[in-house]
Length: 302
Image 1 (cartoon, rainbow, N blue to C red):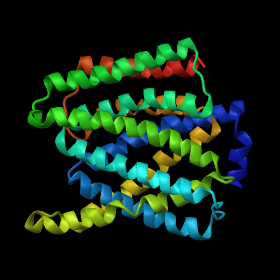
Image 2: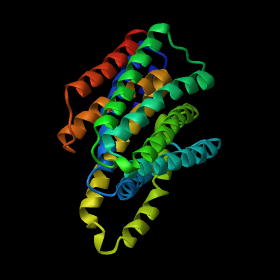
Image 3: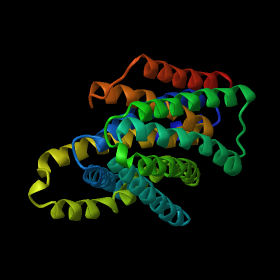
Image 4: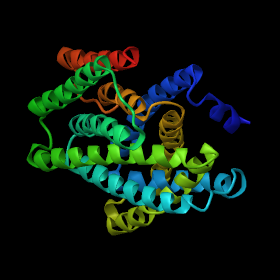
């Protein structure tokens, strides 16, 4: 059984390697997820369609496949629900106010630093001085990318200040849900119980609001077909992205998984260039390389 195999890897060298693969996979997929939410549709509508999709897909697994949650898990699920709703409201607000390539690096840059601190407080995790150097290099690249995008941005400059503030607060909630979800997935015997119930419960809040927002748009509202297709694709990506990083935090250090996931900023810049047609020059390529180098230092310094 997959659950038994994963549990057997906890704290082992093989578990560390699997966690590394999961964290890097989550980085790529999270960048794809962010682009799906920021793309052609209103971010609130995209988020509602995505949440509806993964909530419906998770329901049969939660109700009929995985073991039933232990009694103490219901309070944990409630906390996760509140934290993730706040995160999604902040993220959608930031995407509404600012350009994707400016907002996304700030969100992802503030997240890992506070996640490392949270992992120390909750789980007693410590980093070597080499790993702290790697975090510094990675954060320099992420925030450098945000500053560069800020300087050369030509769209949505009038709302950029509030967008950056919302992005920084969203980053704090990234750290909060990363450490809290790591606590939650470690609190149950079967990690897939947490994942299935988390996605089903997490899919309840945003769809009703997105539907009401869609209704109020009148003639300007998008056709439901393409929107729901985006939601279906986003739901599958969310399963793989968030599920991967949650499993990584159960198998190995929460802080390392949080830092490695932030290489998503590199993938986000590439997606912004290739898909969203946003400009990428040699300076941004150099900053992206800095992010990747920082992640390598963190991994090698452990």
